[in-house]
Image (cartoon, rainbow, N blue to C red; front, side, top):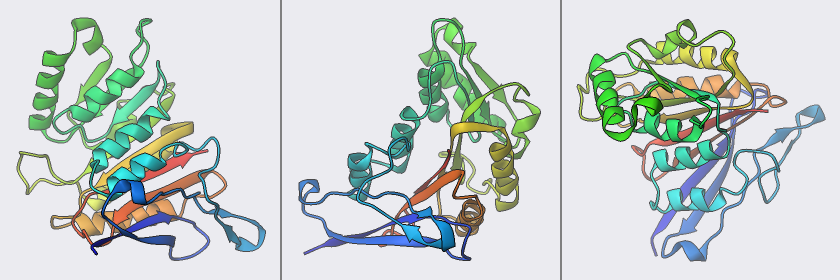
Length: 264
């Protein structure tokens, strides 16, 4: 019988390594397994606890079926990210697509935040002008002129998001797709040093109840190094103020890895 191995990791700053829950599951049908895990929390004395379900009020509550679908290849990493966004983002919010690429995440985010009172904004950033052009074309084809006013496009590095987002903005979500532009020059990739700066910036501007969403593509040179930087950043966040987790397929080493950092 074929089996899939799946790791759900929760990061804690109390140790140099993060704690892992490992599942080895048979893969005939989704109906033959269930997946329900509560992110690890730190108690006095650095003891760790887990339970059979996600804590109430966490953005992951009610998404167990989505995670199982990812486990069995029924959903992509970006699909999982979009489902988590829906549990966090509200109409009228300000959100940031830190690496807008071809614009599909930008469009998905706009559908979550735009409302009839003309509140809600998506700041879409990319260091490649080609990416901004593709995003602009997608928005032109998909949106009305009024809807397009909710999107602000910037040809800058994701590490400079604080330079373009209004100082009084309440940012609910910062989303990253790390790697290279699909269909573009594979030599142009996000870099671990600027990604770390971008994560620090996202941490500073995110409101309580907000989310940093990251999909890390590791199947290219530099991808593993960037993953390590993201994991180290997450592991140092206070467990009192953050819920941090990643979903990883152990026997698919090049599969994209969704990582979610939720500010309590």
